[in-house]
Length: 397
Image (cartoon, rainbow, N blue to C red):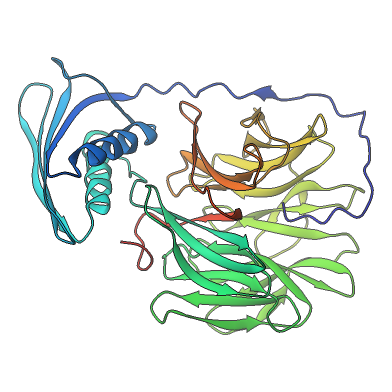
């Protein structure tokens, strides 16, 4: 959670529970059956394929039967050279796909097929091949790591003994914006996957919470100077920085709408943190809801219809989802005491967030159709997740 609590707790007794517990969206999944045989990794690969299918929120793996599309897969190879051969038949026995995937690891091959299977039957993109980056803290070292949706070890993108925080993956997958304190101040950096290096792009004051515009031309961020925080915008083409808000209140945590025309942000202009929507070029901001006495870290879905955020409920912090117009507010986490910083998957069917539900702050993924929760990180303390686009240029392959 990016908002700074200023040493006091307010009781907002005037706010009722104007929201409901989340029930599964209930979209009917497309039943499919799969089989996978072959080399010694085949059993593990089958488990991964079933997970990818079920976690898509679109397909559902079932026992083989009449009326279902069926995928027959063969995994061959070992020691850095694998081939996954697939033969997909439709519900009436017609051939839908016959293809081979090759690579140095079997996991990406399974992910690629799962995503193609989802697209083949639904016309929607899958997320099995995406990654989630996050901040990891262990033994005084901070790092940004990228984790694929499987059991492989994460890739360390950048590491430092100084604080690193609030990474944000660019929409084209080529950069990650983040804040680093390596120069004794919170400066904004861009990590380039192509160059495998980071460069400082904004300095002066405290610069945090970067958020990319959909066309990746601009990065909105929070700049704090002399104790006051406002939203600014960095032009990646020219290097210019423009101030978008100019208030005595704290303005932070911007997130662009998928059109790039608006952004939602956190402001305490009424005395406590609430969500506001304004034009992406600045101007008057309108309050986005009245259901909570404390809310923060909004994230606008890539489909534009919903907004996720963190709010205090009965003394704990949980993740909520509402329609973009502020209606139909639903609580989507119930476990743990500190669930924060939700971000959407690139398809808008999943959320990544950090939670203390298992004793250490870790990254979790939530599939909203069935409310399936998957724990992504299990080692060091992990927080501030950011999801890659569907097609990524760098990172784990």
